[in-house]
Length: 211
Length: 211
Length: 211
Image 1 (cartoon, one colour):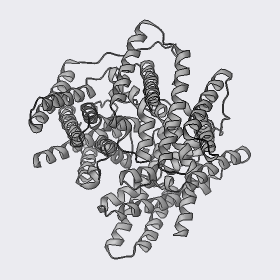
Image 2 (tube, each protein chain N blue to C red; image 1 turned 90 degrees about the horizontal axis):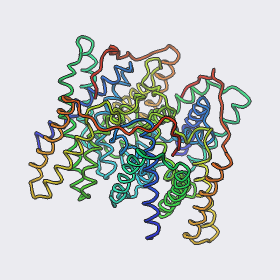
Image 3 (cartoon, rainbow over the protein chains, first blue to last red; image 1 turned 90 degrees about the vertical axis):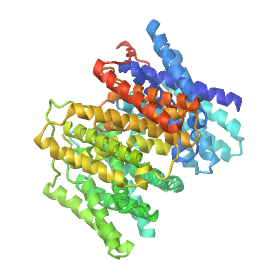
């Protein structure tokens, strides 16, 4: 449990850095930095906890998450005054965070005996929703939907599905979780390295049915 | 119950098509198509369930909704490769969906003995919120607020109000629900056909009080 | 209690005016006016109630809030036809609303014995989230994050922190609440008057690590 708690804190810290950098590119003030760091880091887990009615919400039960996020956000602001952020390292840390959040979401849904499809969905929401909220609050179309991006939610779906499949085959939850995390990590990093992308759905510009 | 369940699945399918087409106009990738189809179809009902604390949320209790949405989204992608989507038919199907979702929201709030105003509000949220979330995630100002649009939320409010009034007068819930759906459908389709619109609130460009 | 209830209604009325004016600047139709007034006025409190699981949500328990908001929104539309809105007075009323909502959020979290950090966070969310949702639905980057703005969330954080500190020192909740509201009000108004702003986090345009 202890190691998972530590990875969880590392996960929110990395997400907070990503949110803070997003705020910096938008030239937000310090409140904007804090809010964007917070929603990026806890948005996915909060949405998961609300949807599956898991109370209290994780960061309300343990405010350590908030301190870690605020510390990571302000460290980012200070660091960026002097040096360029280490983008390569951040990508790897973010992939680690995605894999961890995915499996933590999967476990939270499984605890409640939800259907396999819901379990995988909750893993994906936990891993990806924070970034979507960050982008919406920044006034951007979510990166997640953009065809120019390497696989993100897809890696999360694949890892969650692998987990569910292994557990159905009788593999222990902890081992299946480790393998699921490995799958998320591998797909995410491979897709960055080799530029894997999903097909795009392109509708003609003249199309205008609505709703 | 069976016929309502079937209409409900048809409703989410139609909403999913609308979300998928929206993703196509924005040239999102397949994850973007799936997410937009999902939020459009289940966004309103999810918000309703969270607000009135109805647990588990309908699609967590019955994941059939998710399968239907994903199937409808991918069918849309395939169909659109070969033919232009049948916009006229989709408008009618969407009006049917709006009327169904409105009454399902009305019922969910009524079950919990909420005030008539809350009952009507929940009907409107269930019918309209999915489309608002779809537009926000697409980086668009919600169509719902735009004066160029035919009546949408208004049709939902009128149908919900009619339902509440009839029930107060002693009409059975099922009959009142049928009439309420008819009202939503009639207003929505008539407003498309004859271009009914709401008045606009236009504030001078120089106005700049904030918050 | 009675005076607090009255201030609460005044608070949502003022927020509703702000939402309606926002809709007017965007030239939304009357549904857009109503929705924007509603989300601005009850968005923060609703998010607070969902996060701390306080049921029923305040405006579902007492629909008077909805009537007051709709009345304020339509009064705004009528008033603006004939005269320019009294911007100065609205700024003061809004600062009053911020201070009231902050302390109401603080109390709601304290009732549930949450950690001091969560108490302050809930005060800030209750005071500020409605405006953020209003801006996102209007297709704008939230004013809250913008460096050109006088202190808003910061005033809320300061007032909530003052409240928590005083209560720790043994001051009665009602007195501490009054002082906390005074702090929010003073900082907000002083920052408007003298142009106080937070520092900005500016990241070079070439920066492009993502997520």
